[in-house]
Length: 143
Image (cartoon, rainbow, N blue to C red; front, side, top):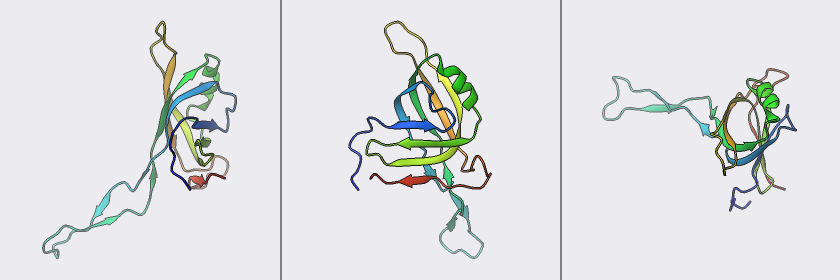
């Protein structure tokens, strides 16, 4: 497995809106977090405070900037708050698929001589949209 040399041609696909006319300019995939530590310090400690990791993991927000077609407004409105499978495909064809929802799409200022873009935020839910079961993100290596 080789490291990515360039982020060019990374894409996002939404299961419920495969025809949405968003043209990605930049994408920040979800991050991973342990959400800090649990303080396990007691009066028995002698020199150091002690800590333990939390058991649960958190998928952090994904975000990015896209050029858009005004026709995409209907799809964007339908996707806001709709839990669905979202797949990020990297330039090496590896994928990161997770359940989440489009939380926000904010169009940028429209200016003469510049491509109109908007910023989006996706919140991972880790909940299967049909079964309601906890579902971990799925990483698939490039083939």
